[in-house]
Amino acid sequence: MIAPMTAPAAAPTTAFDFAPLLAAGLPPPALKWTGFPKYNFVGGHNDAEEIPLGGLVAAAGAVLRREGTSLATYGLKSGPQGYRPLREFLAQKLERTAGISCTADEILITSGSLQALDLVNGILVDRGDTIITEADTYQGALNRWTRLGVHAVGIPLDRDGMRMDALAAALEDLERRGVRPKYIYTIPTVQNPTGTILSEARRVELLRLAERFSVPIFEDDCYADLIWDGRRPPALYAMSRHGGVIHIGSFSKSIAPALRVGYIVADWSLLSRMLALKTDAGSGALEQMVLGEFCPKHFDTHVPALTRALRKKLDTLMDALNEQFGTAAEFEEPKGGIFLWVKLPDAVDTQKLYQPALAAGVAINPGAEWSTDKAHGRSRTRLCFANPTPEAIRAGVAALAEVCRREFGVPARIANVARVPAAE
Ligand SMILES: Cc1ncc(COP(=O)(O)O)c(C=O)c1O
Image (cartoon, rainbow, N blue to C red; front, side):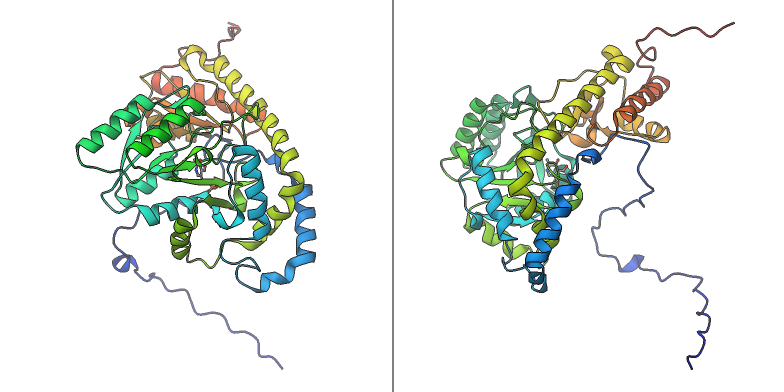
């Protein structure tokens, strides 16, 4: 007979103190997740309605039935660079859409393109190094440079992306001071957060300057599939004559961010150095297999449908901002993507707007966290429109306007729509 279980010993009243044992230089502790805010304009979430569930389910079933036993080995039967059919799909897709001519052997699949950022930084930067970037840029990249002790020189943008006159001046200035930047980081095709696309003429100039000053280019193209009219200039990687470009991309924006699948395109001389740093025994296999099965058949029909849905949400957001903020909210219409970069009046400090907005259920990204130039970012905010429903976009912007008026006095009057005075 099995003896009944005795009651567990009472939990200790004092927890073991790990604090004195923690490694030096750790970042501040993470906050506990408490669920999504009611009106969620932060992060790079995608449109839930547009996740191609039927196709993903069918792909998962088909690939598992056919090749599921290969899960018994680390790296499947493809080795450490990632699931070969997915890399083959990428090689032909990148050629077709971005003009990149590469083979599956020049592609490394990563756990999201964030891991790609880590690997590129891992092989190139040391504490005290300098890199160049668009001044308004991806917070995930900015945080990494801060953590690594890397000095980021920001180059201002205009409607056509990074300004080449400012880049030339910065490169000359650094050369005068004997500093050779480790790379020029750019998000040239639907920039985060500005939504600009670097024109082809500027790409030529960027490559010319990079060659002249012997600085490599780090091209982050993760939004390149989400362009309203589907037209894009060739990738810098494709246009480069001297090979000094590392290209990264992601399935987070074109399919789903929770899959955590990104990739790096680079010459083997560099990939081999990154692979030596990628000590995770391979990125998640199942998501690579599902994508490798899904994409060759459905990527080309899925992406335009997703882009149409995103474009509609952008229109809803711009409409709601015009209605609620009037001329107090200024923005350039992005050429694609999932973000709107909004300038509020100088009186508004979006870092100070953040908390009261959150208390009202509205999450926004304060602009200073997305720029090397904190003063420039101060009155700006990045709004992601992909995930909230059209109703939530409208209600969220109305709630944001209410909080902004209460805290900063702008917009002067809520909704540029005549209000019926309350009956006496
Ligand atoms: C410019 C840029 N690069 C990289 C990433 C990382 O994306 P993921 O790791 O999901 O591929 C993001 C995410 O928002 C991004 O905006």
